[in-house]
Image 1 (tube, helix red, strand yellow):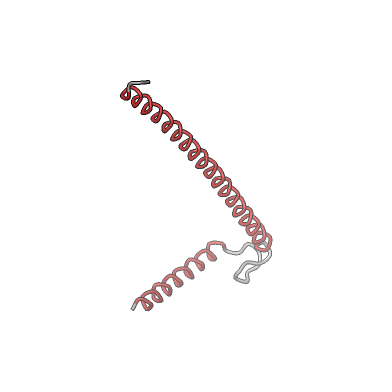
Image 2: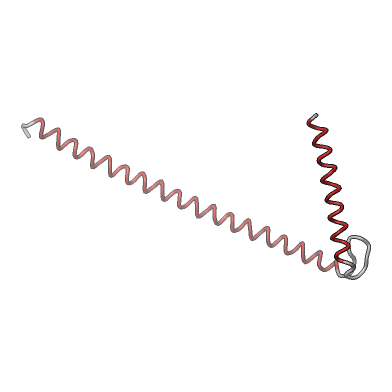
Length: 108
């Protein structure tokens, strides 16, 4: 190639092809790694969810086994469920009030 303009054209063309290929490989590798990370994150989330569900089920079974004999309020048998719920709601309301009072005193 004696013509420098023609040589510069082919060098530029080859440079563009090489850069494009390198970018394609880099992008493909990055997307592959992202896919692997996403799959691992989903698997970890699924495993975490299963573990939480399993523990909750075991706790519910344990409570269910003891709830038929004794409730948390000293009643035997199934008891008045609505009364228990009302008492728990009242306790929650009291705790919320105390928490708000504590927070307002902490801010001042």
